[in-house]
Length: 314
Image (cartoon, rainbow, N blue to C red; front, side, top):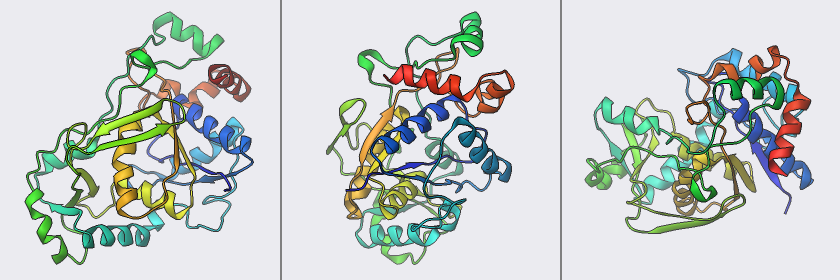
């Protein structure tokens, strides 16, 4: 089977060092397998996605030396490659889940919705750079990976527990012709163990209803949630391996439930160790000091970054 990997940035800010490292690993794995690499623009969040960030994604990743075989800018057999143009695919998946009796409408308060949508990532523990050491690393050694928990397994991402307030509404799902107007949740099979082999961290196992609860599938503002969109897109684009940050390990368990429910082929998974800031919190787009643009301005070269990434992963 031909290897098909993907780069899937979201244009909600400038890419930072953690993105660069993960995307470089994805690029390396695709090229080492003589496979295809897909660029997917995950631009569903219309309130935060900006055209200038879309342009910056292409510029920053090409500056880093990455290329791709399919994408919004180069075309390909599975176009369109921007999620904002793929609504029909997500609606088809929603209808199948509705007809299967696996999802239900949720009418909880805005506060509950915001908590569910935030999907906060727990701080990762390790020995990050800080203070003068961080400054030296930026200008001399560059940042290195940190944020792995004891045993080398990172702290998983998490959603605040959903109390199941609307769970009994699952019998009403068939009455909806469209997902619009309410949010939708996937009802997880309580106590089922979801296991998978990760290419970096090995065997992983999560318990539905214990490690994670019924999760958001479609937002009240009529936008498919992350879990559904990425699963549907990876299947439609025939992705054979998903390479992403280790903060999404628990999301893989959720997505495996969707893959089974939708009768999709299951890809392989490779979750990359995270990079952290001086407070040992994973890098986010608010960390402007470690954005690729800022590093470039400070004289860091793409060759420097690639060499450091290669050293960390050797």
